[in-house]
Image (cartoon, rainbow, N blue to C red; front, side, top):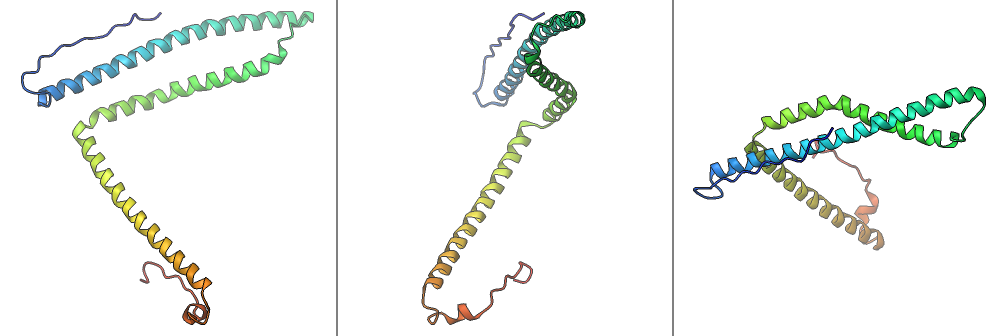
Length: 181
């Protein structure tokens, strides 16, 4: 039971420019519409797979019932080797379908939350996050540079004459916390 492919075509004359609020609104409306069409296509394809899977499961159940009947007569068909691998595969499929069904509420809630945020809010939060990431990357770069310089100094002091730098060899090294600095 699958639906034939159906798509919506919309031609909109733009009176001003491509960047006018009306054009942007229309563009975002079309994007949402396209996403809904894609979601519908995926759902129909999934429904087809589920219907085929249902028929396959019914056939496997009939075969299983026949094996139960023939089990009493001692007539085994030698499919025992495959039953473990097949059972494992079916359990994975059942688990995946079960998690999809239980998570469908979560996906629905995510879609509702996603629709609450406007495009402007997302752009603003993205710009803010990008600035924060850049700032932290700069801090990390500075700290790594300082670390490399300190390691280089340490190596040069260790390889030099101990009498040349007695203050390094005679002092105990103590690490101070940020609050002590």
